[in-house]
Amino acid sequence: MEILDGIADIADRYDGYVLDLWGVVHDGRKPYAGVPEALAALKARGKAVVFLTNAPRRAHAVAAMLDRMGLDRALYDGIVSSGEVSWSHLKHRRDPFFAGLGTRCVHIGPERDLSVVEDGVAQIVAAPKDADFLLNTGPDDQRGPTSPDPYRAMLAACAALGLPMVCVNPDRAVMVAGQKVICAGALADIYLELGGAVREIGKPDPEVYDPVLDLMGNPQRAHVLAIGDSPHTDLAGAQAAGLDSLWALTGLAAEAHGEAPDPDYLAAVAKAEGVRPIAALRSLRW
Image (cartoon, rainbow, N blue to C red; front, side, top):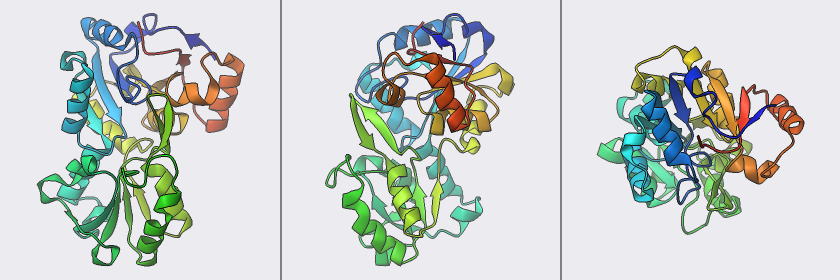
């Protein structure tokens, strides 16, 4: 597999860029070195840039976080988050799963994720017995982000009541400032083992790419490139949506494969994952 040092050599091959956030644009605390400059170069060439993230909060909350990191909003055209898509499903109830879901939910996750139920689209209740469904946005601040074990009792109680789960972040893990932490997807795996019903919203589901392409003005999919660090979500999702992808060797990829992986080894990993990125990328830089 070819490994690119930056995106300059391929930039003009595509009209639109779909970028993962955690592990590609930033490390959970700050943008990676060279990212603002790479985004500025893409925008100077008239390219559409949209962030697609499995963050379990609405797009405006993600934008505010990027503001705090100092990432200029002029460097991108929009944000689509799994939290935003979930909020839309809960609001409009057109999808059959959400149409029959009920409105009362018990929540696993931190309070900062509750933008997903803004405007009264769902009501948080304290006990599983009072809920219609389980809203899973990931680990909370009390039980911590390093292991799913502290969540098993709550998950078992919800599964025993037959509550369907809405998993608002299909990621199993993410890197935050060099530390690997679990995400909502890790809790969804346990729920499935317990026999619970789970609906995951976000990559790799191809449905989340439709609003991204809308923000870009609906270019031809052959002219759009997705960049992500996870084969399971970013690369598989892009492939399912009919987009080319580039495998960023930062974030989860760096943690799993090191900073200088062998190209043949990467090709074997991609094949095992069933994905076909056009190349790998050392980091998102020009």
